[in-house]
Image 1 (cartoon, rainbow, N blue to C red):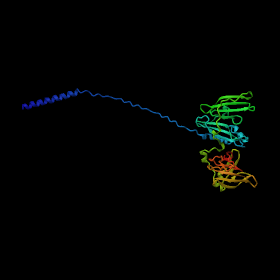
Image 2: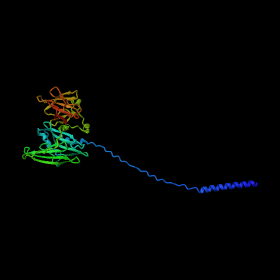
Image 3: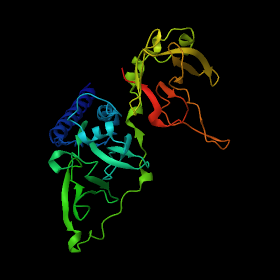
Image 4: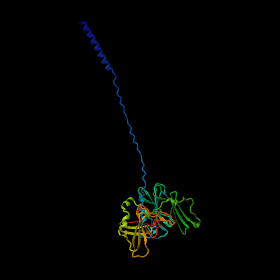
Length: 357
C-alpha cells in the first residue's frame, strides 16, 4: 500500500511539474505582430478626342441661285437690291446671254465658294458675285465694304491661281487703269486688299509684271441658275408631269408658268395652253413614249405654228442633230421637268423652260 501511495505521489508530482512547465512556456510565448498594409489604387482617366469632319451644306447657296434665276431676258419687275444689280443688264443687253454659277474652292480651305457669272456670247464668263459658307451661314465676299458689289460690266474681277482676286477697271479709252488685288483673310470670310495700282498709259506706265496667272476656265464646272437641281423637299412636293394624263386631255400636271433664261414664257391650266392666239392641235409621243410633242398653231388657222416638247424629270431630252449624220446630247437638267418650245431644236440650255410657279 505504501508503495502504491508513493507511486501515486510521484505520478502527481510529475503531472504537476508538467503543468507548470506548460504554463510557463505559454506565458513566455512572444506576442504576435500585426502589420497593416495600406494599399493605394490610382485611377487614370484617358480622354480620347475625336474630330468629326463636317462637310459644308452647299444647299445653303440655293437661295442666292434662286434670286439670280429671276433675272431673265426681257423680264420686268422690281430690282432685288440684295444681289448685284448689274445682273439686270441681262434684260435688255445682247452682250450677255444668261447667268451661270459654279462651285470652286478659291482659297483652298476645303469650302467651295459660289461664283455667279454672266455668260458672254462667246461662251466665256464674267464674275458677278462670290459667296462662301461659314458655320452654316452664307457670306457675301464681293460686298460693298470692299467695293466689289457692282462687278460684271465696267469693273471686272479675275480669279487667280494663288487664291487671290484681281479687280480691274479702266477709263479714258483704256488709258487709265485701276487695279486692286485682294486675298482671303485668316477666317476665309472676308477679302482684304493687298495691292493697288493706278496706271496712266499716256505716261508710259505699264501693268505690273509677276502677277499670278488666272485660273483656267476649264477648271470651273458651270451650271445655269435656271436649271439648278431641286432640293429633296421640293422634289417630294412636286407632282411631276404625267404623260398619260396629258395624252388623255388632262393638263393638270403641267398647270403653272414655265420660263427659260431668254424670257420665253408658257402658261398652262388643266385644259391646256393658256394663250389668246394659239392652241394645241396634236399630241404625239416620242422617244419610246417618254417625251411628248405638242403641235401648236394659231387659233383660226394661218401660219406661225411651233412645237412644244414635254420632258418629265428623269427622262433624257432628245439629242441634237449636228448636221453631219451625228448627234450630241442636249444641255438640260434631267433632274427636273422641262419644256422646249420652238420651230427648230437646238438643245441649248437657255432654250429649255422650267416651272417657276
